[in-house]
Length: 199
Image 1 (cartoon, one colour):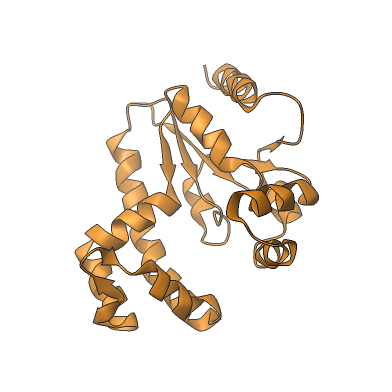
Image 2: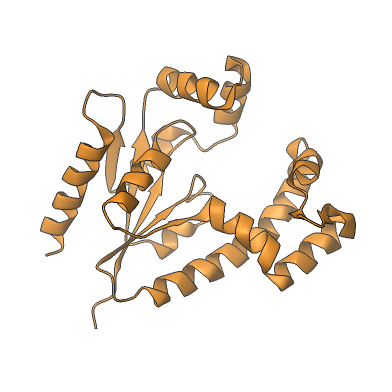
């Protein structure tokens, strides 16, 4: 039986990957959002919950679930604590992604969106990778507007990410979202293109 072609979607902050993913979903494609699924797992996966409590204290959870604001304060300026959190969460997400791929093995294509696809070696689970990008000034303006941040805060976030050029060098396809073509039309074109490559 044919296995699905698994395509990773990545790119720096403000590049447009979420918009790209949304249009794929609108076209009926299945997209695994690692950020979203990590949040779900942090409140539903018993083993993961126990490990988070073990490292960050039982009071990191309240009646509503994981206290994200409290956790963010702990890890935000502490690279070691952030590394610990990532080493706990990422394996759970990878296991869940593998389960999801298996569950949807009847599909022709499956898509997975992750801002840190290369950093956590998720690329090893992908057949192909598409990087969604835009010029840095466009990305900064988008994030300032979206998140209500000042320019220096956005630049600091960009500096904390893998350089865009490194992602582009590792990509199979690159989409620059700084143009007049509507994202929906670009996605339609992309789907036609991959369907012609994998008939």
